[in-house]
Every structure is written in C-alpha cells, then in structure tokens.
Amino acid sequence: MSSILRTIFGYALACLTAAAVVVLFVKTPAQLLALPQAEQLQTLESTGLLILAAATHSAVFALPFALIAILIGILFKSNKALFYSAAGVAISLFGFAALYFSDPARTQALLNSYALTAYALSGLLGGYAYWLFAGRFVGKAKLRNTQEKVKKKKAEKENVTIKKVTNNKDKKNQLNKDPHAKEQTKDNAKKSNK
Image 1 (tube, rainbow, N blue to C red):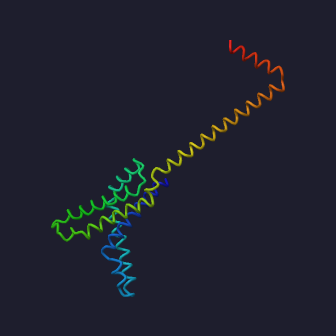
Image 2: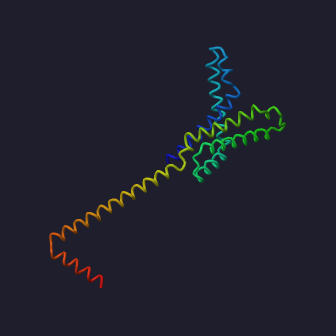
Image 3: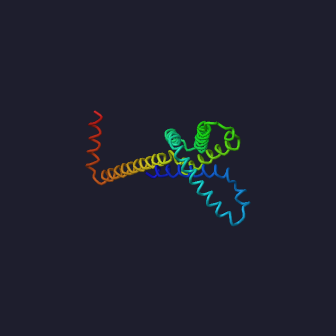
C-alpha cells in the first residue's frame, strides 16, 4: 500500500515540478525580482496559481504515458534516475508535439528552441522529481524482504545445528552415565552393519 501512495505522490510532485519549470520559463525569476515590492507578492500569487493550473493540465495529459513508464520501471525493476528522467523528457516532448499539431495554423511561433527547451527541461526535472520520491525505491522492498528471509533461514539453520549438537552431547552424557546403554548402542550399530 505504501508503494502505491508513494507512486501517486511522486507523480503529483513530478507534475508540479514540470509545471513550475514551464511557468518559470514564461515568468522568469529575473522578471519577478525586477518588479516593485508592492507587485511582487501579487505576481508570486498569480504565478503559484498558474503553476497549479499547469500541473493539473500536465497531470491529465501525461497520466497514461506516465503509467506506462512507471509500469515499465516496475517490470524491469529500474530504480535509476536516468530512466525516469528520460521518460519525463519523452512524455513532455510528446506533449509539445501534441500541442504543436493541435494548432490548426501550425504557426512557427510555437516551434522555437526556447519553448522546446522549456518542455524538455520540465520533463527532465519532472522525471527526476518522480525518481527522488518514488522511482528510486522500485525493487528495494522485494530485495529487503528477500534479505530478511535469507537471514531468517540462516538463523533457523543455526538453531537446528545448535539443537543437534545439544542432542548429541545429551546422548554422550547418557552413554557415559549408563554402561548398559553403551553396550546397546554398540549392539545396534553391529546389527545395522550386517
């Protein structure tokens, strides 16, 4: 259950990160800092709301593609940052292409290196944010469970060995105390050899 919640929160964090990157390409930090003190708070508030709106839009668009990437990561037990960052870039560039091809005029205003960089970087950082929160833990829970099982089996074997040694010592002590038991053990050994 915790891995499912981690995946959901990781996806939400990835969408917020990607949206923040895209919005900060539109409203750059330098522009925000250049504003008069009175306008900065209002502009920061509107920027925050714009990030939330962009994150919601990103979450809706990217969900099927992100699910595929997450399932591939789980299937191949990939907990590498490179995998999730590359998946984020691929998803964001697919979103950029969808935006471009959905424009009936297909204006060249959208197709420029600044917009392309904004989308690629948002995917890269969004994928990395997912990895930080959820992706790096893929496969580790099973590994931890396997290690615990191995330790448990090892401890059980040691307990069995200790019990055998204890039982052998008890038998030797019994044989030393009772001379007739020693003779019976020798007789039983001779009978089994015949």
